[in-house]
Image (tube, rainbow, N blue to C red; front, side, top):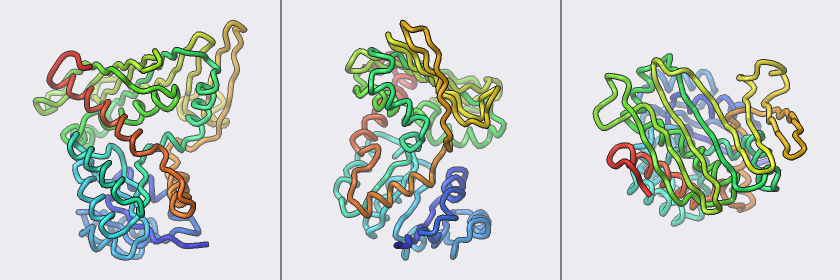
Length: 335
């Protein structure tokens, strides 16, 4: 079994998620962790058994086979370019960039370097609950067209962290790429039209930025959906994932949100119509399976299989959230 030297750039929240899931793997050696804050990098080195720390990404990746980029989106393109120029395989957190031009260059860079395997961190593609729901919907369990209702609102307990994210990106872009991808993945359709509205409800959100957004989409096969995302000191937390069709509906409830039987894992509630029958499906699932995501990258390296999602799919979901963001920041409706 080959051992892959793996380097992490970015010792923040998602960096920790990656490390917690991979540091125990027999085929992984954490060769280096890198952060602009050397104290934080040193803490990661001690916690996850990394060989060394660096504050310079170029030095960090020197002896790595795989690089995990877990920084803010504004640095993703430059770090990807560095890694590909050095012949490294990459997992890069989403969103792929801070703006449309950098996102397009990101996609083209990946396509220009087929010798390097690149996986963008659309973690839900490796989540067993979402994979099960996708299989059910794609096989016709609820029929078509599909109405998709999705919300991910945060009552922020660390407002300073969310404010930093807002200055870098937006609630619609940051996690919205996941759910634009889910809409296309679950239905097999393409997003054709996007509209959005937003609001700035916190006084320290910079002008031109916002902390709440509501996106609606129309799909190529007649399906429609919305995605609601808000980060606020006063908004209640909500996590809604529901898919409705003429033959029934599917609703996902995460293990952490279950009132009863949480030990059974995530819950997929399936309502069949016209039978009017409720079916409960329990899925033992890690909500952020970063270890399985890394395993998939290694499969890509060893067996030359395509990325999941593929780069064109990444580009489509990124374009959709950018279109929505432009609707909110500049114009009332965008198609």
